[in-house]
Amino acid sequence: MRINISRKKIRDSFVSKVEEISGQNLLACYQCGKCSAGCPAISDMDILPNQIIRYAQLGLKDELLHSKSIWICASCFTCNARCPKGINIAEVIEAIRQILLRKREDHLKIEKLSDEEKSNVPPIAIISSMRKFTS
Amino acid sequence: MEISYYPGCTLKNYAKNFEESALYSLKKLGVEVEELPRWNCCGTVFSLATDDLIHHVAAIRNLIRAKESNSNKIMTLCAMCYNTLKRANERVKADPESLDKINQFMYRENIDYEGDVKVLHLLELLRDEIKLENLGKHVVKSLKNLKVANYYGCLLVRPKEIGLDDIENPTVLENIMTSLGADPIDFPYKTECCASYQTVDKPEIVADRTFHILTSAQEQGAEVVTVSCPLCAFNLDHRQKETVREYPEFKNIPILYFTQLMAIALGCPEEVLRLDLNFIDPKPILKEKGLI
Image (cartoon, rainbow over all chains, first blue to last red; front, side):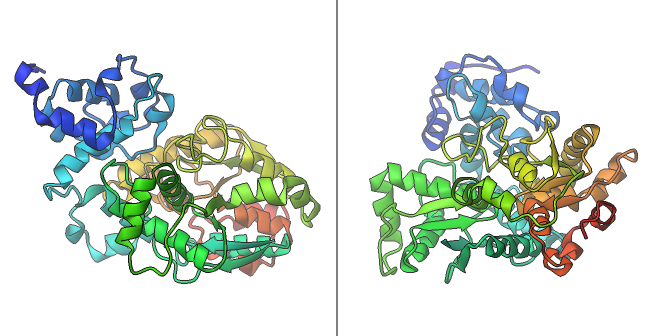
């Protein structure tokens, strides 16, 4: 995959927005890869957690906003627990989701689920998925 | 001992077997449990965005309810409620400005929240207040020869600041099972995420995770797996239907709330267990071990 890096992208407000919403210093990451090594969800991800941080540092907004990974992460906090630099990776991924959700770009279309699909899962699942996937 | 109890959304329906077995056990252990009046949903997930205060209101409002009932401590059974309530509590305790704003959001409440309610999970109550040696003394039917894998999932132990045990290798459930006479087995997937709410629109991911978690437990000899979260319970138990479809070699294994096993050991009648709500039938193995 060809990735274009530019000064313009690095200075894009996207980077500061991710840092602000997540409360994390993206530049603290030195790419050890421990977050991805422990992540239980990587087999379903297109961009791995350590790559998400690198992409965010470089302002690769389109790649991140269109990635599958941000919706696969279920905030289990294994990455946060193991990061030697104390970065909360799950919070960074939440910030990227929030950038979309705050534009009302919902990931879960709850109205498209059938009554059967909705009634066959417990309330705790419906509420948490709506909290994470809808605006 | 008296304690306020916060049930949360799923304990009154899908996880009624969790609630009834826990309440039975606490009564046997001499704990008076009072359900919080007018409790509301905690929101199920702690809001991770630094600038999002409004989603902590639901959690903090429940802590006000505790204060209104003259309690400085609330107990949860659900791991997600525990995590959400405790993190929101810690967040406002560490940040008076946020607390002030949240109190302003709730201007119609009669009292302000002041960060003075403690959030406890039943596991902490058993370990730190009731004490496991006392739990052992109340056992009337030992769970001997029952090989139990204990699954913690994510939110009881992570993040570290609110976790109730070691973040990588928690042992409180194993210690409880030992006190009840069971034979706890260790397995490497005990804190691996079950894929949580992905179960709504991506059940195939949950089925895959369930396969790996439960197969690992079975390889170590587990006959049943205990859980302490209604969402983990649903994913590991009900989703076995999808797991078998994806992995035909997979063998079903019963999933029980740890409180169901505790209630058995404390002598409960079978109807308290509400085994009808467990998807993979635990009755054959419980009968084989002489437990029901």
